[in-house]
Image (tube, rainbow, N blue to C red; front, side, top):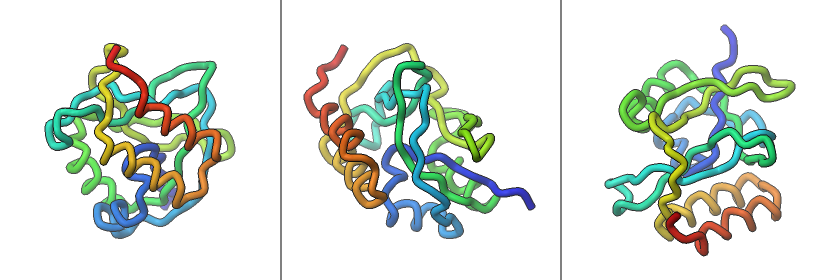
Length: 150
């Protein structure tokens, strides 16, 4: 069976969260993906009406995250958790040396920025730290604390 790979960039970086959501998921690698930027284009009412993460194309940017090897059951569980088809849509991106990898994009992205809650952003930073993402990238994550609603 071909590998089912998932690129995580938001709160799914947290090891304990992914283990709870997708018990069959295994860490494959840490990656830097050129041509995308981290953004917070949607409001989540389960996160106090604050912004939640996504990625969007930007040829001048990059996003760091992790690749998990997933089972079909893990994807069913994650699709449910991410409200696939309602809030997010699962689609592929191409990562050099890995090929096509699944990730989640917002169903609608009008370019807005909604500030994430401190709790949510701290979870993303904690997950990035757990996986040893670059200090430069973690500084970029911390900068979202100061970014105002556009």
